[in-house]
Length: 607
Image (tube, rainbow, N blue to C red; front, side):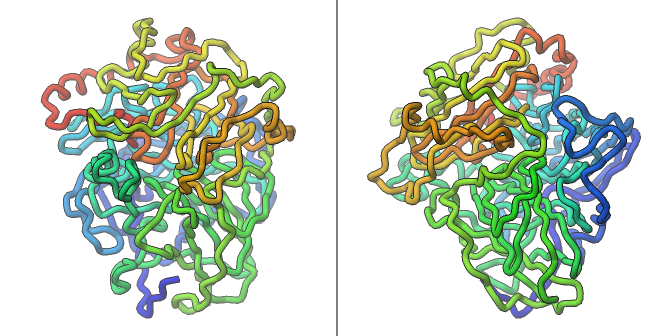
Protein backbone atom coordinates (compact mmCIF):
# COMPACT_ATOMS: atom_id res chain seq x y z
CA UNK A 1 0.00 0.00 0.00
CA UNK A 2 1.27 3.48 -0.79
CA UNK A 3 1.94 5.38 2.44
CA UNK A 4 1.83 9.11 2.92
CA UNK A 5 3.41 10.83 5.89
CA UNK A 6 1.31 13.97 5.37
CA UNK A 7 -2.24 12.69 5.12
CA UNK A 8 -4.89 15.23 4.25
CA UNK A 9 -8.61 14.69 3.82
CA UNK A 10 -11.25 16.24 1.68
CA UNK A 11 -13.99 14.54 -0.29
CA UNK A 12 -14.66 15.33 -3.92
CA UNK A 13 -17.99 13.73 -4.65
CA UNK A 14 -17.74 13.56 -8.40
CA UNK A 15 -20.95 14.28 -10.17
CA UNK A 16 -23.28 14.92 -7.27
CA UNK A 17 -23.98 17.09 -4.28
CA UNK A 18 -26.19 16.07 -1.40
CA UNK A 19 -29.57 17.75 -1.58
CA UNK A 20 -33.18 16.64 -1.58
CA UNK A 21 -36.64 18.00 -1.06
CA UNK A 22 -40.08 16.55 -0.80
CA UNK A 23 -43.33 17.61 -2.46
CA UNK A 24 -42.85 19.62 -5.63
CA UNK A 25 -40.19 22.17 -4.71
CA UNK A 26 -37.25 22.23 -7.12
CA UNK A 27 -33.75 22.88 -5.83
CA UNK A 28 -31.54 25.10 -7.97
CA UNK A 29 -28.05 23.71 -7.59
CA UNK A 30 -24.75 25.07 -8.79
CA UNK A 31 -21.83 22.83 -9.67
CA UNK A 32 -19.80 22.01 -6.56
CA UNK A 33 -16.59 20.13 -7.18
CA UNK A 34 -15.13 20.07 -3.66
CA UNK A 35 -16.96 19.12 -0.49
CA UNK A 36 -15.00 19.08 2.77
CA UNK A 37 -15.99 16.52 5.36
CA UNK A 38 -14.52 14.59 8.22
CA UNK A 39 -16.74 11.55 8.03
CA UNK A 40 -18.65 9.81 5.28
CA UNK A 41 -21.20 8.83 7.93
CA UNK A 42 -21.94 12.34 9.26
CA UNK A 43 -25.46 12.53 7.79
CA UNK A 44 -26.03 8.81 7.35
CA UNK A 45 -27.20 7.63 10.79
CA UNK A 46 -30.43 6.28 9.33
CA UNK A 47 -30.57 2.85 10.89
CA UNK A 48 -31.29 1.72 14.41
CA UNK A 49 -30.30 -1.62 15.92
CA UNK A 50 -33.94 -2.73 15.90
CA UNK A 51 -35.32 -5.24 13.42
CA UNK A 52 -34.55 -3.68 10.05
CA UNK A 53 -36.33 -6.38 8.05
CA UNK A 54 -39.64 -4.57 8.63
CA UNK A 55 -40.58 -1.42 6.74
CA UNK A 56 -44.28 -0.73 7.24
CA UNK A 57 -47.45 -2.58 8.16
CA UNK A 58 -47.72 -4.22 4.76
CA UNK A 59 -44.15 -4.26 3.43
CA UNK A 60 -40.96 -5.89 4.64
CA UNK A 61 -37.84 -7.69 3.43
CA UNK A 62 -39.98 -10.59 2.16
CA UNK A 63 -42.09 -8.40 -0.12
CA UNK A 64 -41.58 -9.17 -3.82
CA UNK A 65 -41.09 -5.64 -5.16
CA UNK A 66 -41.69 -6.78 -8.71
CA UNK A 67 -45.32 -7.32 -7.68
CA UNK A 68 -46.02 -4.72 -4.99
CA UNK A 69 -44.44 -1.68 -3.37
CA UNK A 70 -45.45 1.13 -0.99
CA UNK A 71 -47.27 4.23 -2.16
CA UNK A 72 -45.79 6.89 0.11
CA UNK A 73 -47.39 9.86 -1.62
CA UNK A 74 -44.02 11.65 -1.42
CA UNK A 75 -42.62 13.33 -4.52
CA UNK A 76 -38.91 14.09 -4.42
CA UNK A 77 -37.96 16.76 -6.92
CA UNK A 78 -34.42 17.42 -8.11
CA UNK A 79 -32.76 19.70 -10.63
CA UNK A 80 -29.55 18.55 -12.34
CA UNK A 81 -27.26 20.73 -14.43
CA UNK A 82 -24.85 19.03 -16.85
CA UNK A 83 -21.77 21.10 -17.65
CA UNK A 84 -18.31 20.69 -19.14
CA UNK A 85 -14.94 21.99 -18.03
CA UNK A 86 -11.72 22.04 -20.04
CA UNK A 87 -8.45 21.49 -18.18
CA UNK A 88 -10.35 20.31 -15.13
CA UNK A 89 -8.31 19.89 -11.93
CA UNK A 90 -9.40 16.58 -10.43
CA UNK A 91 -9.44 15.30 -6.87
CA UNK A 92 -5.80 14.20 -7.12
CA UNK A 93 -4.77 17.71 -8.26
CA UNK A 94 -3.98 16.54 -11.80
CA UNK A 95 -5.47 18.23 -14.86
CA UNK A 96 -7.95 16.23 -16.92
CA UNK A 97 -8.21 17.25 -20.56
CA UNK A 98 -12.01 17.53 -20.45
CA UNK A 99 -14.54 16.84 -17.72
CA UNK A 100 -18.31 16.68 -18.00
CA UNK A 101 -20.04 17.05 -14.67
CA UNK A 102 -23.48 16.84 -13.16
CA UNK A 103 -24.68 18.11 -9.79
CA UNK A 104 -27.38 16.28 -7.91
CA UNK A 105 -28.11 13.17 -5.85
CA UNK A 106 -31.13 10.96 -5.51
CA UNK A 107 -31.77 9.99 -1.90
CA UNK A 108 -35.28 8.67 -1.33
CA UNK A 109 -37.45 6.07 0.36
CA UNK A 110 -38.98 2.94 -1.09
CA UNK A 111 -42.22 3.93 -2.82
CA UNK A 112 -41.39 7.63 -3.30
CA UNK A 113 -41.89 9.22 -6.67
CA UNK A 114 -38.81 10.90 -8.14
CA UNK A 115 -38.88 13.83 -10.56
CA UNK A 116 -35.54 14.96 -11.99
CA UNK A 117 -35.25 17.87 -14.42
CA UNK A 118 -31.96 17.65 -16.32
CA UNK A 119 -30.62 20.83 -17.95
CA UNK A 120 -28.06 20.23 -20.69
CA UNK A 121 -25.45 23.00 -20.49
CA UNK A 122 -22.88 21.15 -22.60
CA UNK A 123 -21.55 23.14 -25.53
CA UNK A 124 -21.98 20.72 -28.41
CA UNK A 125 -23.17 17.39 -26.97
CA UNK A 126 -26.62 16.00 -26.44
CA UNK A 127 -27.12 14.03 -23.26
CA UNK A 128 -29.49 11.71 -21.42
CA UNK A 129 -29.55 10.20 -17.94
CA UNK A 130 -30.07 6.49 -17.29
CA UNK A 131 -31.24 5.34 -13.86
CA UNK A 132 -29.13 2.22 -13.55
CA UNK A 133 -30.94 -0.87 -12.27
CA UNK A 134 -34.40 0.71 -12.04
CA UNK A 135 -36.97 -1.52 -13.69
CA UNK A 136 -39.44 1.28 -14.52
CA UNK A 137 -42.53 -0.94 -14.73
CA UNK A 138 -44.70 0.25 -17.62
CA UNK A 139 -42.46 3.33 -17.77
CA UNK A 140 -39.83 2.52 -20.40
CA UNK A 141 -40.03 6.14 -21.59
CA UNK A 142 -37.98 7.20 -18.52
CA UNK A 143 -35.12 4.71 -18.93
CA UNK A 144 -32.87 7.43 -20.36
CA UNK A 145 -31.28 5.55 -23.27
CA UNK A 146 -30.67 7.82 -26.27
CA UNK A 147 -31.57 6.23 -29.58
CA UNK A 148 -33.76 3.64 -27.87
CA UNK A 149 -36.21 5.31 -25.47
CA UNK A 150 -35.62 8.98 -26.33
CA UNK A 151 -33.80 11.49 -28.46
CA UNK A 152 -30.87 13.18 -26.71
CA UNK A 153 -31.48 16.35 -24.73
CA UNK A 154 -30.11 19.06 -27.03
CA UNK A 155 -27.69 21.68 -25.70
CA UNK A 156 -29.60 24.47 -24.00
CA UNK A 157 -32.66 22.32 -23.36
CA UNK A 158 -34.00 20.10 -20.60
CA UNK A 159 -36.03 17.01 -19.85
CA UNK A 160 -37.91 15.93 -16.73
CA UNK A 161 -37.63 12.24 -15.84
CA UNK A 162 -40.41 10.86 -13.66
CA UNK A 163 -40.45 7.43 -12.05
CA UNK A 164 -41.24 5.61 -8.83
CA UNK A 165 -38.77 3.89 -6.51
CA UNK A 166 -40.44 0.50 -6.74
CA UNK A 167 -37.14 -1.06 -5.65
CA UNK A 168 -34.85 -0.14 -2.78
CA UNK A 169 -31.14 -0.28 -2.08
CA UNK A 170 -28.10 1.17 -3.81
CA UNK A 171 -27.53 2.28 -7.38
CA UNK A 172 -26.31 5.12 -9.55
CA UNK A 173 -27.25 7.24 -12.54
CA UNK A 174 -25.10 8.11 -15.54
CA UNK A 175 -25.20 9.57 -18.99
CA UNK A 176 -26.16 7.08 -21.70
CA UNK A 177 -24.86 8.88 -24.76
CA UNK A 178 -21.40 9.36 -26.20
CA UNK A 179 -18.51 8.87 -23.76
CA UNK A 180 -19.89 11.26 -21.22
CA UNK A 181 -20.03 9.24 -18.05
CA UNK A 182 -16.33 8.44 -18.43
CA UNK A 183 -15.82 12.21 -18.34
CA UNK A 184 -17.80 12.53 -15.10
CA UNK A 185 -21.58 12.55 -15.72
CA UNK A 186 -22.63 10.15 -12.98
CA UNK A 187 -23.84 10.08 -9.39
CA UNK A 188 -25.05 7.77 -6.64
CA UNK A 189 -28.58 6.74 -5.72
CA UNK A 190 -29.70 5.63 -2.25
CA UNK A 191 -33.22 4.28 -1.77
CA UNK A 192 -33.98 3.44 1.85
CA UNK A 193 -35.87 0.22 2.54
CA UNK A 194 -35.76 -2.88 4.73
CA UNK A 195 -32.60 -4.95 5.22
CA UNK A 196 -31.91 -8.65 5.61
CA UNK A 197 -29.40 -8.03 8.42
CA UNK A 198 -29.56 -5.59 11.31
CA UNK A 199 -26.94 -2.87 11.62
CA UNK A 200 -26.39 0.29 13.65
CA UNK A 201 -24.98 2.84 11.19
CA UNK A 202 -25.63 3.33 7.49
CA UNK A 203 -22.43 4.80 6.07
CA UNK A 204 -24.18 5.65 2.80
CA UNK A 205 -23.02 5.26 -0.77
CA UNK A 206 -19.36 4.65 -1.60
CA UNK A 207 -18.65 4.73 -5.35
CA UNK A 208 -15.29 3.42 -6.60
CA UNK A 209 -14.26 4.35 -10.12
CA UNK A 210 -11.32 4.51 -12.48
CA UNK A 211 -10.17 7.96 -13.61
CA UNK A 212 -8.46 9.04 -16.84
CA UNK A 213 -6.59 12.27 -17.47
CA UNK A 214 -7.28 12.20 -21.19
CA UNK A 215 -10.64 13.12 -22.69
CA UNK A 216 -12.74 10.05 -23.36
CA UNK A 217 -13.23 10.82 -27.06
CA UNK A 218 -9.51 10.79 -27.70
CA UNK A 219 -9.08 7.62 -25.66
CA UNK A 220 -11.89 5.86 -27.52
CA UNK A 221 -10.49 6.86 -30.89
CA UNK A 222 -7.30 5.04 -30.02
CA UNK A 223 -9.11 2.01 -28.56
CA UNK A 224 -10.97 1.78 -31.88
CA UNK A 225 -7.85 2.21 -34.04
CA UNK A 226 -6.42 -1.22 -34.97
CA UNK A 227 -3.15 0.41 -36.09
CA UNK A 228 -2.44 2.16 -32.79
CA UNK A 229 -3.73 0.05 -29.87
CA UNK A 230 -2.75 0.78 -26.29
CA UNK A 231 -1.17 -2.70 -26.12
CA UNK A 232 0.91 -3.34 -29.25
CA UNK A 233 -0.46 -6.18 -31.31
CA UNK A 234 -3.83 -6.25 -29.48
CA UNK A 235 -6.43 -4.18 -31.37
CA UNK A 236 -9.15 -2.86 -29.09
CA UNK A 237 -6.99 -3.02 -25.96
CA UNK A 238 -7.99 -0.38 -23.39
CA UNK A 239 -5.90 2.33 -21.76
CA UNK A 240 -4.57 1.88 -18.25
CA UNK A 241 -6.49 4.12 -15.87
CA UNK A 242 -4.48 6.99 -14.40
CA UNK A 243 -6.01 6.69 -10.95
CA UNK A 244 -8.83 5.09 -8.96
CA UNK A 245 -11.14 7.31 -6.93
CA UNK A 246 -12.98 6.32 -3.75
CA UNK A 247 -16.04 8.46 -3.15
CA UNK A 248 -14.58 10.86 -5.68
CA UNK A 249 -11.07 11.31 -4.27
CA UNK A 250 -7.62 9.78 -3.88
CA UNK A 251 -3.99 10.74 -3.53
CA UNK A 252 -1.89 11.20 -6.65
CA UNK A 253 0.16 7.97 -6.76
CA UNK A 254 2.91 9.76 -8.69
CA UNK A 255 3.18 12.58 -6.15
CA UNK A 256 1.95 11.84 -2.64
CA UNK A 257 1.87 15.54 -1.75
CA UNK A 258 -1.23 15.96 -3.92
CA UNK A 259 -4.74 14.66 -3.49
CA UNK A 260 -6.26 13.00 -0.45
CA UNK A 261 -7.31 9.57 0.68
CA UNK A 262 -11.02 8.99 1.15
CA UNK A 263 -11.90 8.24 4.76
CA UNK A 264 -14.65 6.14 6.31
CA UNK A 265 -15.24 6.42 10.05
CA UNK A 266 -16.14 3.34 12.10
CA UNK A 267 -17.66 3.57 15.55
CA UNK A 268 -16.11 0.91 17.80
CA UNK A 269 -18.47 -1.91 18.68
CA UNK A 270 -21.05 -0.88 16.07
CA UNK A 271 -22.20 -2.66 12.92
CA UNK A 272 -21.97 -0.58 9.73
CA UNK A 273 -23.63 -0.80 6.31
CA UNK A 274 -21.52 0.32 3.36
CA UNK A 275 -23.08 0.72 -0.08
CA UNK A 276 -20.40 -0.10 -2.66
CA UNK A 277 -20.77 0.95 -6.31
CA UNK A 278 -18.37 0.17 -9.16
CA UNK A 279 -18.97 3.25 -11.31
CA UNK A 280 -15.93 2.68 -13.53
CA UNK A 281 -15.36 3.07 -17.23
CA UNK A 282 -13.43 -0.20 -17.52
CA UNK A 283 -11.81 -1.38 -14.29
CA UNK A 284 -13.02 -4.23 -12.06
CA UNK A 285 -11.83 -4.51 -8.46
CA UNK A 286 -11.70 -6.88 -5.52
CA UNK A 287 -12.58 -4.90 -2.39
CA UNK A 288 -11.26 -5.93 1.02
CA UNK A 289 -10.73 -4.28 4.42
CA UNK A 290 -7.61 -5.26 6.32
CA UNK A 291 -8.48 -7.20 9.48
CA UNK A 292 -12.23 -7.25 8.81
CA UNK A 293 -14.80 -9.52 7.21
CA UNK A 294 -18.03 -8.46 5.54
CA UNK A 295 -21.52 -9.83 5.03
CA UNK A 296 -23.15 -9.19 1.64
CA UNK A 297 -26.81 -8.23 2.11
CA UNK A 298 -27.70 -7.03 -1.40
CA UNK A 299 -26.49 -7.79 -4.93
CA UNK A 300 -27.40 -4.80 -7.09
CA UNK A 301 -30.99 -4.05 -6.01
CA UNK A 302 -31.73 -7.62 -4.84
CA UNK A 303 -31.72 -8.27 -1.06
CA UNK A 304 -29.89 -11.50 -0.18
CA UNK A 305 -29.50 -13.55 2.96
CA UNK A 306 -26.36 -12.39 4.84
CA UNK A 307 -23.39 -13.99 3.08
CA UNK A 308 -20.03 -13.78 4.91
CA UNK A 309 -16.93 -12.99 2.83
CA UNK A 310 -13.36 -11.77 3.24
CA UNK A 311 -13.51 -9.76 0.00
CA UNK A 312 -15.90 -8.93 -2.85
CA UNK A 313 -15.19 -8.71 -6.58
CA UNK A 314 -17.11 -6.01 -8.44
CA UNK A 315 -17.28 -5.40 -12.18
CA UNK A 316 -18.47 -2.21 -13.85
CA UNK A 317 -22.07 -1.41 -13.02
CA UNK A 318 -22.41 -3.70 -10.02
CA UNK A 319 -23.42 -2.69 -6.51
CA UNK A 320 -22.91 -4.63 -3.31
CA UNK A 321 -24.30 -3.65 0.07
CA UNK A 322 -22.11 -5.05 2.81
CA UNK A 323 -22.27 -5.02 6.61
CA UNK A 324 -19.05 -4.78 8.66
CA UNK A 325 -18.61 -5.15 12.41
CA UNK A 326 -16.20 -2.61 13.93
CA UNK A 327 -14.72 -5.24 16.26
CA UNK A 328 -11.01 -4.56 15.82
CA UNK A 329 -8.65 -2.46 17.97
CA UNK A 330 -9.10 1.29 17.61
CA UNK A 331 -6.77 2.20 14.73
CA UNK A 332 -6.72 2.95 11.02
CA UNK A 333 -7.08 0.22 8.35
CA UNK A 334 -6.77 0.10 4.57
CA UNK A 335 -9.79 -0.50 2.38
CA UNK A 336 -8.03 -1.94 -0.68
CA UNK A 337 -9.15 -2.26 -4.30
CA UNK A 338 -7.09 -5.02 -5.89
CA UNK A 339 -6.80 -5.78 -9.60
CA UNK A 340 -6.93 -9.28 -11.01
CA UNK A 341 -3.51 -10.68 -11.86
CA UNK A 342 -4.89 -11.80 -15.24
CA UNK A 343 -4.73 -8.21 -16.63
CA UNK A 344 -8.00 -9.00 -18.43
CA UNK A 345 -10.36 -6.76 -16.45
CA UNK A 346 -8.49 -3.55 -15.79
CA UNK A 347 -5.25 -2.03 -14.60
CA UNK A 348 -4.14 1.33 -13.27
CA UNK A 349 -1.09 3.52 -12.89
CA UNK A 350 -2.09 3.56 -9.24
CA UNK A 351 -0.90 0.04 -8.42
CA UNK A 352 -2.44 -0.09 -4.93
CA UNK A 353 -5.66 1.94 -4.84
CA UNK A 354 -7.01 2.34 -1.34
CA UNK A 355 -9.12 4.35 1.08
CA UNK A 356 -8.73 4.51 4.86
CA UNK A 357 -11.00 3.21 7.60
CA UNK A 358 -10.53 5.26 10.78
CA UNK A 359 -12.04 4.13 14.07
CA UNK A 360 -13.37 6.94 16.21
CA UNK A 361 -10.60 7.80 18.67
CA UNK A 362 -7.75 6.65 16.40
CA UNK A 363 -5.08 9.13 15.24
CA UNK A 364 -5.36 10.16 11.58
CA UNK A 365 -2.41 8.38 10.03
CA UNK A 366 -1.66 5.92 7.29
CA UNK A 367 -2.24 2.32 8.44
CA UNK A 368 0.98 0.47 9.15
CA UNK A 369 -0.17 -2.94 7.86
CA UNK A 370 -0.88 -3.37 4.17
CA UNK A 371 -2.78 -6.63 4.62
CA UNK A 372 -2.61 -9.84 2.61
CA UNK A 373 -3.79 -9.97 -1.01
CA UNK A 374 -7.38 -11.17 -1.41
CA UNK A 375 -8.21 -14.33 -3.28
CA UNK A 376 -7.64 -14.02 -7.04
CA UNK A 377 -10.95 -13.27 -8.76
CA UNK A 378 -9.98 -14.27 -12.30
CA UNK A 379 -12.38 -11.45 -13.22
CA UNK A 380 -15.44 -13.46 -12.06
CA UNK A 381 -18.12 -12.19 -9.69
CA UNK A 382 -19.41 -14.45 -6.91
CA UNK A 383 -22.79 -16.01 -7.76
CA UNK A 384 -23.26 -17.73 -4.38
CA UNK A 385 -25.45 -15.22 -2.48
CA UNK A 386 -29.08 -16.34 -2.10
CA UNK A 387 -31.93 -13.85 -2.65
CA UNK A 388 -34.37 -13.34 0.19
CA UNK A 389 -37.35 -13.46 -2.18
CA UNK A 390 -37.21 -16.66 -4.25
CA UNK A 391 -37.75 -16.64 -7.99
CA UNK A 392 -37.01 -19.75 -9.99
CA UNK A 393 -37.01 -20.00 -13.75
CA UNK A 394 -38.29 -23.24 -15.34
CA UNK A 395 -34.80 -24.50 -16.12
CA UNK A 396 -36.06 -27.75 -17.61
CA UNK A 397 -37.65 -25.78 -20.45
CA UNK A 398 -34.34 -24.28 -21.57
CA UNK A 399 -32.82 -25.57 -24.77
CA UNK A 400 -29.98 -23.80 -26.55
CA UNK A 401 -30.97 -22.82 -30.08
CA UNK A 402 -29.67 -20.27 -32.60
CA UNK A 403 -32.75 -18.15 -31.79
CA UNK A 404 -31.77 -17.68 -28.12
CA UNK A 405 -27.98 -17.56 -28.55
CA UNK A 406 -25.99 -14.32 -28.64
CA UNK A 407 -22.44 -14.71 -29.95
CA UNK A 408 -20.04 -11.99 -28.82
CA UNK A 409 -16.93 -11.39 -30.92
CA UNK A 410 -14.25 -8.81 -31.66
CA UNK A 411 -13.99 -7.66 -35.28
CA UNK A 412 -11.43 -5.51 -37.08
CA UNK A 413 -12.76 -3.74 -40.16
CA UNK A 414 -9.70 -3.16 -42.32
CA UNK A 415 -11.67 -1.05 -44.80
CA UNK A 416 -12.75 1.44 -42.13
CA UNK A 417 -9.66 0.77 -40.01
CA UNK A 418 -11.83 0.41 -36.91
CA UNK A 419 -12.32 -2.11 -34.14
CA UNK A 420 -15.86 -3.29 -33.34
CA UNK A 421 -17.57 -5.59 -30.89
CA UNK A 422 -20.31 -7.60 -32.54
CA UNK A 423 -23.29 -9.63 -31.36
CA UNK A 424 -24.26 -12.33 -33.85
CA UNK A 425 -21.98 -10.60 -36.38
CA UNK A 426 -23.73 -7.25 -36.03
CA UNK A 427 -22.55 -4.06 -34.34
CA UNK A 428 -25.42 -2.06 -32.85
CA UNK A 429 -25.94 1.42 -34.30
CA UNK A 430 -28.95 3.37 -33.02
CA UNK A 431 -30.49 6.52 -34.46
CA UNK A 432 -30.55 9.45 -32.08
CA UNK A 433 -33.14 11.28 -34.19
CA UNK A 434 -35.48 8.28 -34.40
CA UNK A 435 -35.29 6.13 -31.26
CA UNK A 436 -36.78 2.66 -31.18
CA UNK A 437 -39.87 3.87 -29.33
CA UNK A 438 -40.62 6.15 -32.30
CA UNK A 439 -40.93 3.03 -34.44
CA UNK A 440 -43.18 1.48 -31.81
CA UNK A 441 -45.37 4.61 -31.77
CA UNK A 442 -45.70 4.45 -35.56
CA UNK A 443 -46.34 0.70 -35.55
CA UNK A 444 -43.28 0.19 -37.76
CA UNK A 445 -41.30 -2.82 -36.58
CA UNK A 446 -39.11 -3.09 -39.68
CA UNK A 447 -36.07 -1.93 -37.76
CA UNK A 448 -32.68 -2.10 -39.47
CA UNK A 449 -30.39 -5.08 -38.98
CA UNK A 450 -27.83 -2.99 -37.09
CA UNK A 451 -30.47 -2.02 -34.55
CA UNK A 452 -29.76 -5.47 -33.07
CA UNK A 453 -33.42 -5.76 -32.09
CA UNK A 454 -34.66 -9.03 -30.64
CA UNK A 455 -38.44 -9.17 -30.39
CA UNK A 456 -40.00 -10.97 -27.43
CA UNK A 457 -43.76 -10.81 -28.09
CA UNK A 458 -45.32 -13.02 -25.43
CA UNK A 459 -46.56 -11.94 -22.02
CA UNK A 460 -45.22 -13.35 -18.73
CA UNK A 461 -43.01 -16.06 -20.17
CA UNK A 462 -39.47 -16.88 -19.13
CA UNK A 463 -36.96 -15.76 -21.74
CA UNK A 464 -33.64 -17.65 -21.68
CA UNK A 465 -30.48 -16.35 -23.32
CA UNK A 466 -27.19 -18.09 -23.94
CA UNK A 467 -24.31 -15.66 -24.50
CA UNK A 468 -21.18 -17.16 -26.06
CA UNK A 469 -17.94 -15.22 -25.80
CA UNK A 470 -15.46 -15.97 -28.56
CA UNK A 471 -12.98 -13.40 -27.28
CA UNK A 472 -10.35 -13.44 -24.47
CA UNK A 473 -11.99 -10.52 -22.63
CA UNK A 474 -14.64 -10.96 -19.90
CA UNK A 475 -17.60 -8.61 -20.23
CA UNK A 476 -19.83 -7.13 -17.48
CA UNK A 477 -23.27 -7.62 -19.04
CA UNK A 478 -26.07 -5.33 -17.86
CA UNK A 479 -29.80 -5.59 -18.60
CA UNK A 480 -32.18 -2.64 -18.50
CA UNK A 481 -35.73 -3.05 -17.21
CA UNK A 482 -35.18 -6.34 -15.38
CA UNK A 483 -33.11 -8.39 -13.01
CA UNK A 484 -32.12 -11.73 -14.47
CA UNK A 485 -31.64 -15.13 -12.94
CA UNK A 486 -28.12 -16.43 -13.51
CA UNK A 487 -28.86 -19.91 -14.81
CA UNK A 488 -25.25 -20.98 -15.28
CA UNK A 489 -21.87 -20.06 -16.72
CA UNK A 490 -18.54 -21.55 -17.67
CA UNK A 491 -15.51 -21.38 -15.40
CA UNK A 492 -13.33 -18.28 -15.44
CA UNK A 493 -9.99 -18.80 -17.17
CA UNK A 494 -6.90 -18.44 -15.02
CA UNK A 495 -5.00 -16.89 -17.92
CA UNK A 496 -7.54 -15.54 -20.43
CA UNK A 497 -4.91 -13.74 -22.53
CA UNK A 498 -2.97 -16.95 -23.24
CA UNK A 499 -2.78 -17.23 -27.07
CA UNK A 500 -3.40 -20.98 -26.76
CA UNK A 501 -6.96 -20.47 -25.46
CA UNK A 502 -9.94 -21.33 -27.64
CA UNK A 503 -13.64 -20.58 -27.15
CA UNK A 504 -15.55 -23.05 -24.98
CA UNK A 505 -19.08 -23.59 -26.29
CA UNK A 506 -21.98 -24.55 -24.05
CA UNK A 507 -22.58 -28.29 -24.32
CA UNK A 508 -25.90 -29.43 -22.86
CA UNK A 509 -24.59 -32.99 -22.50
CA UNK A 510 -21.56 -32.07 -20.41
CA UNK A 511 -22.55 -28.70 -18.89
CA UNK A 512 -25.95 -29.55 -17.46
CA UNK A 513 -24.44 -29.84 -13.98
CA UNK A 514 -23.37 -26.21 -14.19
CA UNK A 515 -26.97 -25.00 -14.49
CA UNK A 516 -28.61 -23.84 -11.30
CA UNK A 517 -30.90 -26.26 -9.54
CA UNK A 518 -31.32 -24.22 -6.37
CA UNK A 519 -34.85 -22.92 -5.64
CA UNK A 520 -33.43 -19.42 -5.15
CA UNK A 521 -30.68 -18.77 -7.72
CA UNK A 522 -28.90 -15.43 -7.59
CA UNK A 523 -30.56 -12.49 -9.36
CA UNK A 524 -29.08 -9.17 -10.30
CA UNK A 525 -28.94 -6.78 -13.26
CA UNK A 526 -25.20 -7.04 -14.02
CA UNK A 527 -22.90 -10.07 -14.17
CA UNK A 528 -19.79 -11.36 -15.94
CA UNK A 529 -19.64 -13.14 -19.28
CA UNK A 530 -16.43 -15.20 -18.89
CA UNK A 531 -13.58 -14.90 -21.37
CA UNK A 532 -13.84 -17.55 -24.13
CA UNK A 533 -16.83 -18.94 -22.22
CA UNK A 534 -20.58 -18.80 -21.90
CA UNK A 535 -23.32 -17.38 -19.68
CA UNK A 536 -27.01 -18.26 -19.47
CA UNK A 537 -29.49 -15.79 -17.99
CA UNK A 538 -33.29 -15.72 -17.83
CA UNK A 539 -35.92 -13.09 -17.10
CA UNK A 540 -39.69 -13.01 -17.13
CA UNK A 541 -41.37 -10.88 -19.79
CA UNK A 542 -43.33 -8.76 -17.33
CA UNK A 543 -42.31 -5.27 -18.47
CA UNK A 544 -43.24 -3.98 -21.96
CA UNK A 545 -40.59 -1.78 -23.52
CA UNK A 546 -37.36 -1.51 -25.49
CA UNK A 547 -34.63 -2.64 -23.08
CA UNK A 548 -30.97 -2.95 -23.99
CA UNK A 549 -28.65 -5.74 -22.84
CA UNK A 550 -25.07 -4.60 -23.17
CA UNK A 551 -21.51 -4.71 -21.98
CA UNK A 552 -20.96 -1.96 -19.41
CA UNK A 553 -17.35 -1.26 -20.40
CA UNK A 554 -17.58 2.13 -22.11
CA UNK A 555 -15.23 1.22 -24.96
CA UNK A 556 -17.08 -2.01 -25.78
CA UNK A 557 -20.57 -0.51 -25.85
CA UNK A 558 -19.32 2.34 -28.04
CA UNK A 559 -17.91 -0.30 -30.37
CA UNK A 560 -21.28 -2.03 -30.61
CA UNK A 561 -21.63 -4.71 -27.91
CA UNK A 562 -25.38 -4.55 -27.28
CA UNK A 563 -28.77 -5.87 -28.30
CA UNK A 564 -32.25 -4.44 -27.78
CA UNK A 565 -34.97 -6.66 -26.36
CA UNK A 566 -38.24 -5.33 -27.75
CA UNK A 567 -40.52 -6.79 -25.11
CA UNK A 568 -44.25 -7.20 -25.81
CA UNK A 569 -44.19 -4.49 -28.51
CA UNK A 570 -47.93 -4.61 -29.13
CA UNK A 571 -48.55 -3.51 -25.53
CA UNK A 572 -45.99 -0.71 -25.18
CA UNK A 573 -48.09 2.16 -26.52
CA UNK A 574 -51.01 1.29 -24.25
CA UNK A 575 -48.77 1.08 -21.19
CA UNK A 576 -47.26 4.60 -21.50
CA UNK A 577 -47.59 7.86 -23.40
CA UNK A 578 -44.76 7.47 -25.91
CA UNK A 579 -45.74 10.50 -27.98
CA UNK A 580 -45.63 12.94 -25.08
CA UNK A 581 -42.31 11.53 -23.89
CA UNK A 582 -40.65 11.79 -27.30
CA UNK A 583 -41.92 15.35 -27.73
CA UNK A 584 -39.91 16.37 -24.66
CA UNK A 585 -36.62 16.02 -26.53
CA UNK A 586 -37.02 14.96 -30.17
CA UNK A 587 -38.16 18.22 -31.79
CA UNK A 588 -35.31 20.14 -30.14
CA UNK A 589 -32.78 17.46 -31.05
CA UNK A 590 -33.90 17.26 -34.67
CA UNK A 591 -33.61 21.04 -34.95
CA UNK A 592 -30.13 21.00 -33.41
CA UNK A 593 -28.60 17.91 -35.04
CA UNK A 594 -28.09 19.27 -38.61
CA UNK A 595 -25.78 21.93 -37.17
CA UNK A 596 -24.01 19.69 -34.65
CA UNK A 597 -20.27 20.11 -35.35
CA UNK A 598 -19.58 16.51 -34.28
CA UNK A 599 -21.22 13.67 -36.15
CA UNK A 600 -22.08 10.44 -34.33
CA UNK A 601 -18.98 8.27 -34.72
CA UNK A 602 -19.91 5.12 -32.82
CA UNK A 603 -22.86 2.95 -31.76
CA UNK A 604 -24.62 5.96 -30.25
CA UNK A 605 -25.04 4.09 -26.96
CA UNK A 606 -21.72 4.99 -25.44
CA UNK A 607 -22.13 5.50 -21.74
